[in-house]
Length: 293
Ligand SMILES: C[S@@+](CC[C@H](N)C(=O)[O-])C[C@H]1O[C@@H](n2cnc3c(N)ncnc32)[C@H](O)[C@@H]1O
Image 1 (cartoon, rainbow, N blue to C red):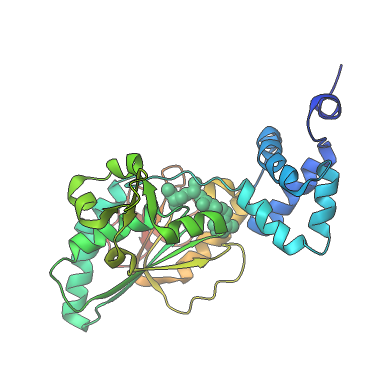
Image 2: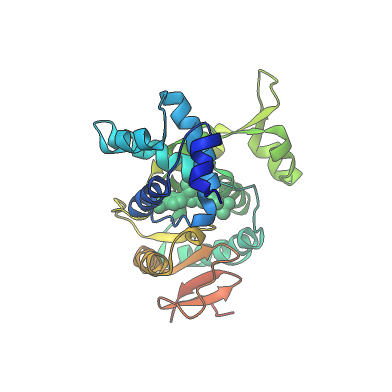
């Protein structure tokens, strides 16, 4: 019986030996914490075959040589960009934005009345192509409307430089923008002058975003603590230990009254990291001001 490896040798454009696959899976785990199981072999092959073609390489062995060679660091970025999963959309898991509007914004207004602090910092960690941080920005802009004197910013970070560039550009297919409720769409999106089926985020909304490449598994340069952290549908690709460490690090970056938002399948369950649930996949510090769910 022929093995997958034999098939690679006989019928595929590029040969990818089991050992090549394992080295690639280990490299992405070591650098980005992303776990790639055996069942992702086909996906790894198809995503990287494009890169091998671009580089004119004969097989995966030659690609691994490149990863080890003088262009290794730059190639590692290509590898990470090729193997991340970036699915996202506007108003995804919309109950999180409802919570920002109905709980957090009123809380921040009350807080400002007592301590005069009108500065808000929110982090979208693993922002992909930007639908999440721009949804947050639209929610904030509407909820803060008419309240002058506030300085609010959203830090949008991702390890993947391709999606981060898309996020920075803020330009989306008209079909994707159609899913945004009309009251936001008309206010915060402009048709492209080229009439090419795309719409762009308004400059005023974009002015609330700051973009940076950041690997959640490396050092974080930020000095400030955050009022809210969104890290949704990112930790599903990590193992339990990395996820635990990450939640502890997020906790260290949260102000006393901050909230952490995770994706729908990422609840903390027993692994609370001294955070309590205050809503569906929404967490706050134990003993903090937000009520438990
Ligand atoms: C499925 S998308 C989620 C996008 C958005 N948060 C949402 O829920 O719609 C996951 C994102 O996490 C990013 N990511 C994966 N590993 C990462 C890491 N180690 N550091 C930073 N970002 C990472 C990926 O590049 C990808 O854009």
